[in-house]
Image: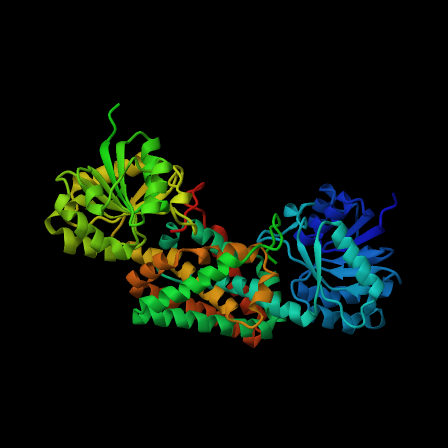
Length: 297
Length: 297
């Protein structure tokens, strides 16, 4: 059987990119992986782990002669990365990313790729964890995950179909939506929880007795705050890229918190219990879309 | 070997109480468990599960002739429960509770037990989960858990020593602190996270597109919001009982959130990344005190 792709040009060798290369290899979908990371030691580690076959000394060299290119870099680095590779893009090459925000990524692709923007299919696989780095890469990271594709009007139908088939071949379920709808939804279900977890840890650490309090924390704390351990650079980028939606979600949250606070301050137990019951019910009714994944993105 | 206790009078047959009885039996520390629940079907289920040996038709009958009495009821029911049993308390009986707040429990015990308050050792085992009810009871719930004891000046040394030995015999690690210090710490590491999770779910459910957004939620959401599925009555009681500390913690949190919001709104990426990095570091430095438990309380 001929692999679907001759060469994956992997730009960024972290958890997301490394896991993608491993999954692609496991599925027999690629003959060779040429990888680039700005960190030589990361590249060497990726080579030793079998994530990449050939290290490249630049993003341009990783993209060159690749029929599949994956950008797995912080979203803020998307524009520079696309700019670095655009002159060597093969005419038929499929270019994808794995960024957690999409409106900014699409805007960057429009600006930089211009007439070639149709080859770029913006992707967001709902997988990952608070862990980052090539050392956590796994061929199973995307198993059963949802992947959101956010094509624009200029995206080529053929490339969208190839991207869809590729993710499905990796065991993912593909959803298509607009970049704006994507960013609104993820502000609500991913970005805001991360922000709240960060704010919570800062509130705790900033108290005189915070360190002592923390010695009493149990598994509720552990799960609630797990995402606060996520990568600061990556999340700074995401919040910045998705600024308007973040501010809107913070507004929704502040109102809901204010409601509960007022009920506690007023000692209105029946209304407080009803408000908690509504939250508890909403949570109980939620079902994970992708059982078995360790998605956080 | 003679069991340490002849008869456990278990008042409240939920997750915490049921698990305590099972653990006590597993450790061979009790000859007989007499249990009371206000729900006859719960009591019958507890009997069938082997949690209790003898159902009692009232709290008073469960406490009568028991040399160990465990109150495992919502904290707001503590005073009425103690009032119901105080006339039948054996002189040597050890009375404990498992409530998540302690200042209110201690105040209730002082009011009701009066000269017998020395027999009461206020306890808070850091165990439990968002699940509740006898059907989730397990002999292993308290394995390796921390248990906070909050004696007052009138607590009898002998009863404090018995309670300590008992929890240690169940595989727990005992810490002693004042009721006020307990409530301040748990407002920070347990009660506030629950409140934030409830507020978050209400904020999400209250949005026009909330239901659609939820179909995209991944494991980050799943862990962050898990505690929002907790029992509304129980948490209404806890927030109400620990009102002052809750309001103080909400204040700390609001400040921390405001800081991040301002940095996002201002587009101050370096300061935003530094603030996130502080949170991420604080979380990374935290170690669970009790590996292997499923504590949330």
